[in-house]
Length: 69
Image (cartoon, rainbow, N blue to C red):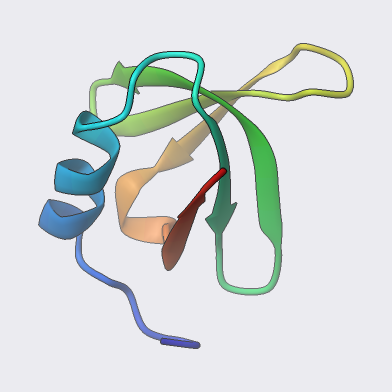
């Protein structure tokens, strides 16, 4: 699904089934982010970076794919 969104409802449905602390990779348009699933904050997915433990906030409509590890 390169270049197309899998849909905000689909992204929300997938992420809402994951336990907090699950390792995931989130595909965006031209990059991917790897980290630990930390939950939702409004319309944002929150992921903790494994490198520096910073919280990354990602708008659900920017997510193109999710890989669960």
